[in-house]
Length: 162
Image 1 (tube, rainbow, N blue to C red):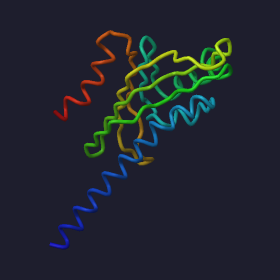
Image 2 (tube, rainbow, N blue to C red; image 1 turned 90 degrees about the vertical axis):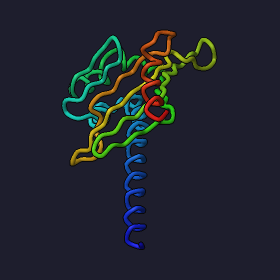
Image 3 (cartoon, rainbow, N blue to C red; image 1 turned 180 degrees about the vertical axis):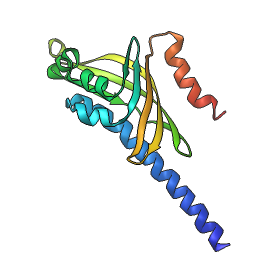
């Protein structure tokens, strides 16, 4: 009986550790891109990982580095930008995981003496466990602009639990 309880506690601890690791990765995305840390951002993904942020699809770490170092992104962060990640909904299944969350991109608005929300989106992150820990294999980001795509990403997360 004690051995069974110990095994159960070990499984629960492993699940909690996985969830915490995934949470930290999602939470680190904003500080990584907003500080212009291209290599740190790229290392969140597998070598061939995909970031699908319609209409742009970034394939692989080189494309992610290019996005962070690119003129458009650099202009955003040099003028004041914050990529805010909402609390993640996490489902771990062995060496695979899916995380769903909201995100917002907040921009400095000096003409308004403050900030403005530029984009609000839903995200689906798919992860795999590697020798280096959890890595993103695919991330979809869709705007919550009244179209179905953004809502569909959110629905996929909660429908599996209904």
